[in-house]
Image (cartoon, rainbow, N blue to C red; front, side, top):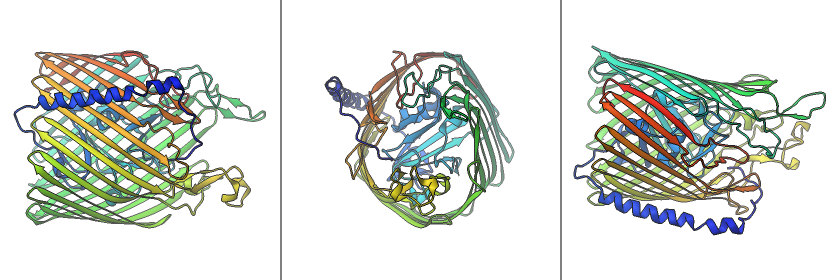
Length: 640
C-alpha cells in the first residue's frame, strides 16, 4: 500500500469506454437470475473448512468470507498457474511481473501484497525479507484444495493477515490404492507432467506426487520501458515439485502425520546491472531467479475425550532465492514453528479454541552483515457457537515479537438466518502488518524503529443458497494507518550518510473499501459461476488511488457436460490501474476448454487460453502471454 503521485487523468477515449463496466454489471445481474432459475432440487452440503476458526467447521457457519477451491474446480480450470486459478475463483487481484513463472503477489480487498498470510498444510511460507509468499514457486500438481479467507484474520494467524489468508492443502493418502497422472504440451514451447499415488495399509496411509513444468515464454518487459530494462530474449521458466505424506493412526481418533514438500523454480526475467568502470545500465545479462521452497512438518491430532481435541505440530519452512545476472545475490528465510492447539466442546454446538504458537524467523543475505533473527510467541483464544438460526464467533490473539514488540488483535462476528437459505452476517476486527527484515535492517533503507501497520476493518454480507444455486454479496471497509513506505525525504531518515537517498518510514494511512458479489448455479449438465468486485483503495492524506489496484474486476465461467464431452469457458475482466505515473488500460481475457472422456479414468482435453489474443499488461511495461493452445491427457484410477 505504497503512496505515489496522482496518476494522469483518463483520456476522453478512455472515459467513453467506462460505461462498459455497467454493461458487464447488467450481464452479471442477468447471470444471477439464470443461476437462481437453474437451481437443482437436491440440497447441497456445506463444505468443511478450517481456515475460518483454525478448526474444522461447515463453511455456512462461518461469519468470515471464505471461498473453497476444491479438487473439481482445480481439475476443470483453464488457469495456467496457482495464482491465476485463485484470482478467477476467489476474486483477488493479481500483481505479476509478466506471465507464468514471474514474481507475483495478490491484493486481497486492496491490501498490499505483503498483507496476505499463506499457509501450506498449516505451515506459514514466504520470504521474511520481502514479506510475501512467492506464488510462482507453487505448482497445481500437488494441490488437493485451497481455502481463501477474504478479510481480516490477524486474531487467528497474527502478523500480515490484513487482506486475508490463503491456505493450500496437499494430497493425503487413504483407502484403496489410487494412481493418477497427466501430461500437457502447449504454445510457447510449454509442457507439464505430473504423477501421483495414494493408498493406506492397516493403520498407515501414504501419498506421493511429482511434477514438472516449463515454458519458453515471452520477453517479460516490452520495448521502450520506463527504466530501460528491455531485453529481447524470452523469459521462460522451469519448475520441479514433489510432495510426500505418511500417516499412522495408532488408535481410532488419533493420527501422527509427516509431510514434506519441495519446489525448485528457475525463472528468467529482465533487469539492468550497473557495473564498473562505467556504471552504465546494462540489460543484456541473462537474469534469473533460482528459488527453492521446502516445507516439512510433523503433527499429531487426537481426541483424548469426546469433548477435547488436541493438535500438536512442529514445522520448518525454507525460502532460498538466488537472483541476478552477472552479479547474483542470495536471500534465505528459515522459519521454524511449534503449535499446540486445543478445541473444547463446552456445550452442544459451542466450541472453545485455545492455541499457543512459537515461531523463529531467520534471514541471511549477502547484504546483511550477519544472520537476522526474531522470535514470536502468541496465544490465541477463540469461541464459536450456533444458537438455532444464529451463529457467533469471536477470537483474540496476543503476539509478542522480539523485533517489533507486542500486538493484540481481535475479531467478532455473527450471522442470522432470516428465512430458510438466506443469511445475514457481520464482522469487525483489528489487524497489523509486521515490518519485514528489509524494512528493519536493509543497508541504506531499513530503520530498526519502524512500527507495524495497524488496521480496523468492518464488513457485512448476505448469502442465499438453495440446492446447487447460491448468491452472496459482501461490503467492507478497512482503515490502515502507519503505512510502511519508502520515504525519499532525507530529513525523515537516520543521520548516517547511507540514508542520503531515503529510507523506510511509517507515513499516512489508507482506506480500503468495496463490495464483492458472487453467484453460482447448476442445471442438469450446466454449471455457471460469476463474481464482481468493486474496490476503492485510496491514500487518505492525498485522496489518490493506491497503485496497481483496479477499481473493478469481473470473472464469469460456464461448463457443460453431455455424455463423454465437457465444454467450458472462462472470462476475466480487469479494470484500469494507476502504475508508476500512468493509467494502465483495462483488459479482458477469454479461455476455452473442451474435454473428451471415453472412460471414467481417462480424459483427453484441449484448452485455448487468451483465445482472442488480447494484449495484457499486468504491470507497467510488463507483458503477459498472448493466445496459447494446450493439448493434454489425464488419468485417475479413482475416476475423474
